[in-house]
Image: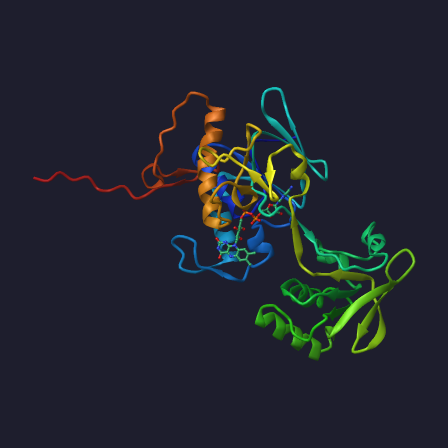
Amino acid sequence: MIETDILIIGAGPTGLFTVFEAGLLKLKCHIIDGLPQPGGQLSELYPKKPIFDIPGFPSILAGDLVSNLMEQIKQFQPGFTLNEVADTIDKLEDGTFIVTTNKGTKHHANSVAIAGGLGSFEPRKPQLEKIEFYEQNDRGVEYFVKDPEKFRNKKVVISGGGDSALDWSIFLSNVASSVTLVHRRNEFRGALDSVEKVQELKESGKIKLITPGEIVGFNGKDHIEAVIIETNGETITTETDYFIPLFGLTPKLGPIANWGLEIEKNAIKVDNSLDYQTNIPGIYAIGDVNTYPGKLKLILCGFHEATLMVQSVYQRMNPGKKYVLKYTTVSGVDGFDGTRKEAEKQVVKAID
Ligand SMILES: Cc1cc2nc3c(=O)[nH]c(=O)nc-3n(C[C@H](O)[C@H](O)[C@H](O)COP(=O)(O)OP(=O)(O)OC[C@H]3O[C@@H](n4cnc5c(N)ncnc54)[C@H](O)[C@@H]3O)c2cc1C
């Protein structure tokens, strides 16, 4: 059982910044995310895009903002359960919670902060006959590259035209025995340097490119042996061990929708006049996942909501104790790892 003060569901920017604000109040956090890496939409959807409305940063790449947040919270030693989806919640008699993931990991916390953004991302699946069969029990269809070693010396067909398809084709061209990239258009929507790299690898024979092309079926009894591709009015068969469709992710509120929370238009209703608490005391919802009059789905708003929310958790954990707000420039920051950050002391000198 993982024990923590605040269990945060979602490692997007809101969830990550919660760790910092909670740390200032000496509250410990643990984060669950269904994705293999932190950063939420910023890492998954637009890591190389610049953001222009983060206070103090005229421009910052989404991926760099995530790295900075990770650096900022390191001192508060958050725990992470990645690659696992928060599945069920139980409220105990003492008002604390146990959250269990789809892989059975149990977390016990005083309070739960749902920072689930647009929900748990689910891969967009191509509509192909028997695809559900090949998705299961390692039969050859994979929607994520969780461990590239799985594809070492294997034949791989990747389908898609965005950054993920390009990046994984490039990466796996050094791991797999063959990589075929199939896309229904000739144009790719990805970073220019990735498109150029794929072009180079195609010319050197390390990637086979089939455009315009579309996977229309499979061959293979217990495991995929080949994919059937329609290209330029022809139907061809390409032998493969794995088919990796990378068509992006669709957000779904997922299991949280069954937790008894008040939901409005796929978002969790909260009390924004006070602390972003849901209809269940001790469960908060912050960032893109919540709704209230005037709500804006912006990173900046998630940071603000996280800051107010942790004050409420502090009161829950320390009833009656008055918290006096201190500026970090004055109080410094004491990390749980023993580090201390503080502003240089001013020299006090008497004036004659
Ligand atoms: C292309 C694009 C550009 C954008 N540009 C800007 C911009 O310029 N400025 C700006 O302010 N905003 C921008 N946004 C919006 C911004 O990305 C969101 O407001 C922000 O990501 C919300 O952060 P979050 O932490 O609330 O949620 P998210 O970033 O969505 O993170 C939520 C996380 O929760 C996880 N999760 C959900 N449910 C579960 C569960 N049950 N178990 C485990 N994990 C779960 C998800 O996997 C995800 O990682 C942009 C969005 C997009 C798509």
